[in-house]
Every structure is written in C-alpha cells, then in structure tokens.
Length: 60
Image 1 (cartoon, rainbow, N blue to C red):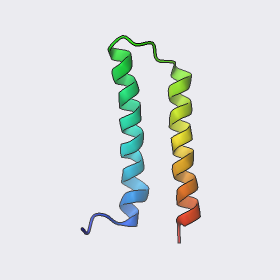
Image 2: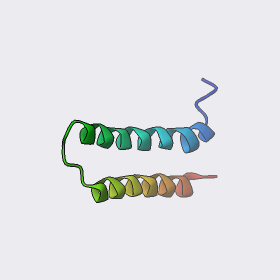
Image 3: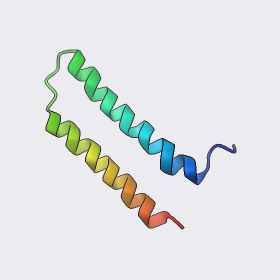
Image 4: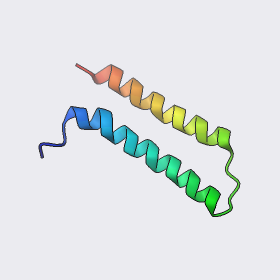
C-alpha cells in the first residue's frame, strides 16, 4: 500500500489518535458526564510527548 509510508505514520496517524481521544472526551461532556479539563489536557500532552519521543528515537 503506497500510502502507508513513514510520512503517513509520523504526520497523519498521530493527529487521528489525538483527535479520537479528544473527541471521546467531548462526547462524554456532551452526554452530561463531568470531564475534568486538566485530565483531558494531560492525556493529550502525554500522548503527544510519547509520539514525539517515538519519532525522535526512530527517525533516520
């Protein structure tokens, strides 16, 4: 599959993962659950840091 390249995994896939997680928190808030904004921010920053760490270690 030509679209499954390193550029795809390092550019598009992290955005899809972060968007999915952020969307799940927005959905929970819309449904009436109490969602702590700091919890959302820490999750997003933690995942972004993990993606950055993976990219910096395995980039050629």
